[in-house]
Length: 111
Length: 114
Image (cartoon, rainbow over all chains, first blue to last red; front, side):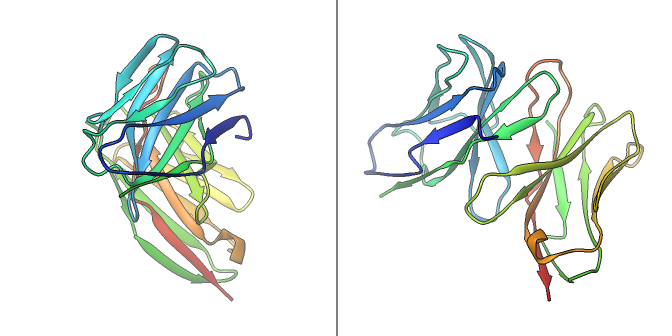
């Protein structure tokens, strides 16, 4: 899991601003994922991508957007349309055997 | 879609005792069941997983059992140690051969006391 990086670790934004979270992996994994974690809850899938230039909505995609222009990178944009953006955001990547490995996460606070 | 329920939400055991965390899932097509450990403020770490073609898997003090008929699976930690204290998440997915959409339980906070 050391091959997955997310930046920044902490991010603060004003309400109404879009913000982009970075996720990079050097594990040569085809699949990448974005999850959201709220206190006392499990992880919920926002978007996932199986291959470059292709991605699918997860369970809570509203208010978020992604791109997958390179195999190594899968940035997530939290738009102003997301009603409750404050959360811990986790990126993951996985190979063909289903295992998913997580990055260190970005804690986003919107005030 | 898939729904995963996890119990208990909190669990306190004495050092050296065993801990058991249980999960149930709703979609009978699910065939991959990982367990993650998350320490405070850190990333979830995959600790063990099981696929539907086996009923039990062990790795040192950790074991996972799967009952496909009843659609439930459990994590067993023996000889617990203080460093086992963390939040544990179960998950389930359907192996599509490409990306796997994991559905997570809500987590169990395990506290190992001295």
